[in-house]
Length: 205
Image (tube, rainbow, N blue to C red; front, side, top):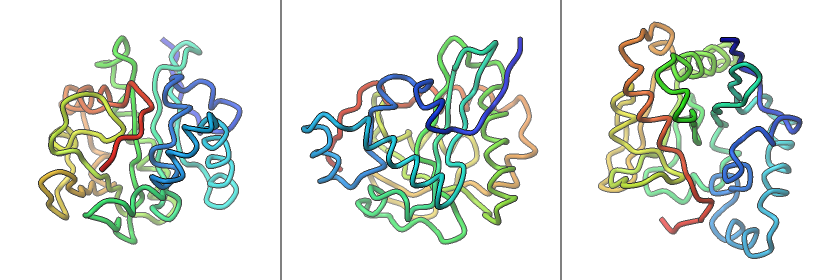
């Protein structure tokens, strides 16, 4: 099985799941996001966002391929590039951290170590760039795949709550801890990375 992880660019954006490449939940503020959906332009807004982040900050994601088939991805960026992050009651993200926006591995490819390798690859990238941690806004009442990852799944892979909230706690993972992850975190990662959105709906906070 040949597998590779490559930086997300405009060239391989189409390799993301269809729903995800047209979702701008994180990339736009709530008002602008709703407007883009109504105008039928979320895919163009997504492309514009990725282009801007690549030009100004650099790599903001990874795509995972197995035998040249795209099977997963992760998206991350400093909170300054994530307008939706300011809408959360537990913001802002810490200045030494990057925000984990979302991540996904196709069900048929979970349990093969891809999730661990993907997160470790991101950790190495961000450590080289001077960041110490990755933070995420979790959904403490998560019931079905959505734009927010479930808080309990984040906790299961090593995230710690840094700002509690009954609905949207902010959680933090120290990047160096991910580099020593072994196979014992695979089950928890499968649950986490299988929890990405299925629909591009912009739901209210």
